[in-house]
Image (cartoon, rainbow, N blue to C red; front, side):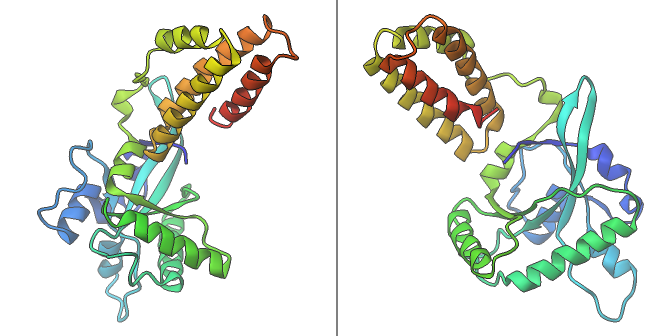
Length: 262
């Protein structure tokens, strides 16, 4: 799952903004008062589609997603590019994925998409987020994934804990990204690992676990950064090492694993 950059301007450009403007924190506070789930995240503006639905004064209201926020995939200079509207469903009051009926969810999402599409030319992100508490998210993931697999659809519904969501959402002011790991330290440890294949195997396992941890926490920029540093070092080292050696083979295996992180 790629990391996403907050793009409030994309939400502001939606025709619905004037009639149902809100924030992710505001909607969360309304549904879960006093919990402050999305602090200290920077402000994330959101469309409150429930408010819009009520403003139509229909005799029968249809359910909508809790919040629609703006996200971007990349930042080019000062500009956010590849922007989308992302549907976010807040489920912090649920236990173990209870009361999550996939057919009801499908109708809710489809109705929300219909409202957004009717409001003008917008791009909607391919996945829809369901956010649980840190404690309940693992149970909800298992239950929802099992149900989705049973009926063979709705793989685009992604479950995250509050902490995972916080790790995934990037403040555009924080870019360019400042990595946690130092490139020079990685390169120095790589040079030490080249002494023999046994050292390199330990080195490879260490960074594999490190990358796995970052990926599990959705700190994907760090995953990409570490992988690119290591791939560059492996590429340079392969030119100096016998291609039939165990060390060379170990490097090729590691390189293939890292390529999927770029």
